[in-house]
Image (cartoon, rainbow, N blue to C red; front, side, top):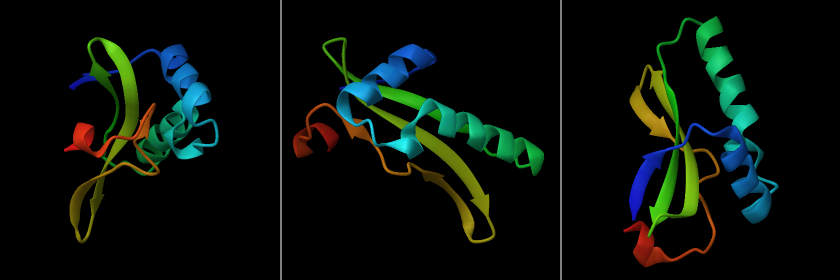
Amino acid sequence: MQVKEITDEFLWEKFISDNSPQSFFQSWLWGEITRKIQRIYGDESYMWRFGLYQNNILEGIFQVVKVTARRGTFLHIIHGPIMKNWNKLQLQ
């Protein structure tokens, strides 16, 4: 599998509606809200959207938020990734 950044909102939302329409925390809108909240609080955190591709076919998506907290810095993928088909071997 290849990991590529996704910048197309329509592609992102279409994938969610086709595979997991109840996934609010992986929606494009939730990512935008997260970015705005980070800016309001002056947080230097970041947010990225990635797609998992196999043979140039989008198989999964995940939104990653970099969180800087007192206990350390970590990457958070809330309620993700969203996959077309879950296969443990693909994610290893």
